[in-house]
Image 1 (cartoon, protein in one colour):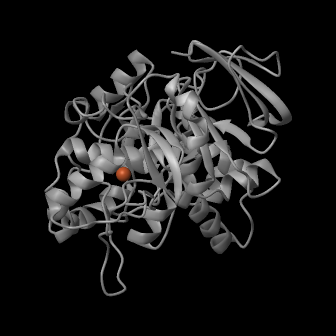
Image 2 (cartoon, helix red, strand yellow; image 1 turned 180 degrees about the vertical axis):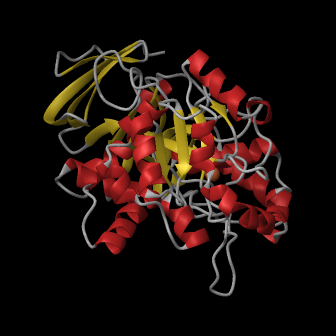
Length: 411
Ligand SMILES: [Fe+2]
């Protein structure tokens, strides 16, 4: 196993800017230095690639990534999430999805994220329901969190109650994650006020969707120092509206972009970033700059989850989580936001490669076993685990040769 190595001849991009023709040294899964001497084992990238922190997908449901989507019919939109949930529970696509094992659904979701560069993900689901499936996944799943589904009396029973879960988050320095105001009925619209009255609104809160927020709600969230998760793909599909994102950003709130599951959201985090920008332009007739979007999938989710000392940027002593990209644009943040799955050259998680082009064969082999060689986006790749074998199991279980947009394997 390689405990120490370096990459040279690449541009390094983080929140502080862009260092051209630089190098980075990794020791014991962490960044040992930037711009210094090369290690005995070095990969030279010949100044053709950009290196970014690995993407963090702040909001997903790893049991629910399957296609097609389930949505409102006949040009109507939903009143709240529960009507969508009813449609999902009574859909043919859910019946087909449930023919697979839960473990395979978790693997499918992990690869949805991996192939789009999202190598740290939160599965918004109870610990008791997901902990037995996450240890074998090829990406990092955040395990330090408390949660509830949402605030209304009809919310799904995911936690031990808002007050208990929030108190636990404060005691353990964890995030408290909850869907908030995903709809327009009276009770859902009152969610933030309810959290405030319970004494459960502070900087531990990670509030998902927030489409019903008034300007007064936004001021309260800003004062509390809570984080907001923006999922425009899911919001526009289900409700034809999203949160007041410009006002939320102007209030200085920590905002992250999340995909939600593909039954309502975008295919993956790349599509979601691009949809977020398009949606912002459509609503406000102005551009949301690429650096803001970059922050929303790197350092902002790290702050929301209280793991910014470890993840979310490229700096000495942080965990070695990297996305190496073949840039389509010169500007590093534009290159990032405009990437496609096939532009990802290499992904490194905790110092170990988990996905990359076949040119890095030796780097994979020096990092032990557990990889397969296959084809994706018409290229030979190495990947942790066996996504091709997974797809074949899915085909067998469902009796359908299913191709999912977020799995780019050439099968
Ligand atoms: Fe969700």
